[in-house]
Picture 1 (tube, one colour):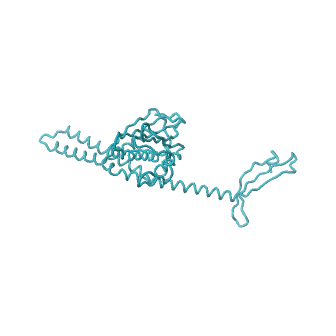
Picture 2 (picture 1 turned 45 degrees about the vertical axis):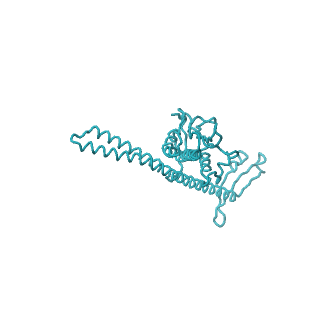
Picture 3 (picture 1 turned 180 degrees about the vertical axis):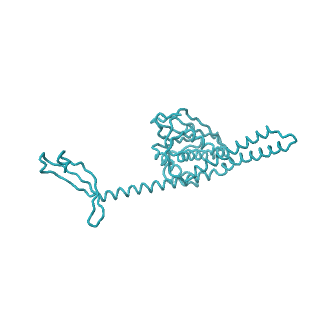
Length: 307
């Protein structure tokens, strides 16, 4: 009443009351007078119960959608890592075998009549280095398959790409694919979930390697590049020299359950697009020249945070 007397209007506001049965009722209240004397006017009390119920249902639907998306993304990561099992095992086996070789060499140097401590020191240094190599591979795998809520950290996209390349290097070599990079300097940091963005890069790289595996002739080349996006932020491109995209499929590739693979589920690219869109970015495909495909995505950058 005080607001109505002083200004002539009461801006609509929400309030909760109790019904006779003790249940709560949310309402929207507002009022306005028609004349300075305030003797005439209009007021309303709008029951918001249905609207509040609808809003709660929308929030619950959004929560369930995000939960399902996270579950599918996690399953997709585990599946992709499963595809790389043989190559990853080889990546781990190499430093482990080198460690055993260096350990045996160190023992021989120690067992000699005049132990060569310098040779032993060098062998132990190589052992430590190879141990770190094996641990790094395991750490990357654990980070990707770990089930954890999304995070929003500031990250170096080039560093994230290099880590994924290390995981896929063996698979690329096994399929005769040469991997090249063109990572721009001075890019802004991006804010996002490192694991999810690496999942997108991993999926695009594995898809490119698989596409080129069936090529009988010609070079099998994969190029990962980064640069500044035209709309601001960072753009990542994965180019291959494979058979390319079938006409009219550029957008269908991102539809759920659409696949060109005999044993594919058609979820990988759909999940990748949802991840990028959740990061307020964009993912799209186009033809490469003279042949092959290009998959590109953008993510917003952090202003004035170049590295």
